[in-house]
Image 1 (cartoon, rainbow, N blue to C red):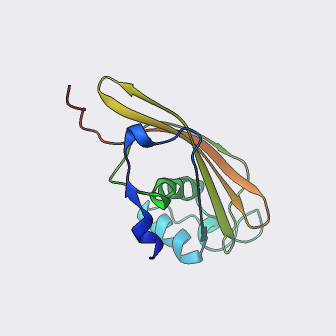
Image 2 (cartoon, rainbow, N blue to C red):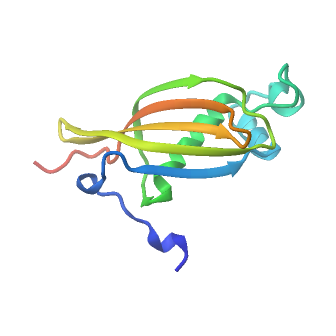
Length: 146
């Protein structure tokens, strides 16, 4: 059994508050470049050199990776983000392994929609915290049947 088989559909009622998620990836030059091209921001900081030494990633790229955390355990369709608070603490250096952790801290129903609140952090392989965020997402945009 590969870990793909272990994933299950995300069922709002069954999601335990306090559940934790973890994933990691290598912040490659290609990842940074593709993201910079995708948002049409070819800042040399991302591709060549920055005031921090070598190149660093666009901070939003790091936050965007947090979306993958639920996918470590669940088969998820698209999410709609309704609220997002992010603190950027240190630049993310190209070539580092980035370790992400997330925790489900709250869930609630409002006007027939299911909301989840997750707190996430990204820390590089040297233990330097890059960013943390708290995001509120709607799991299925369709309202639940009354």
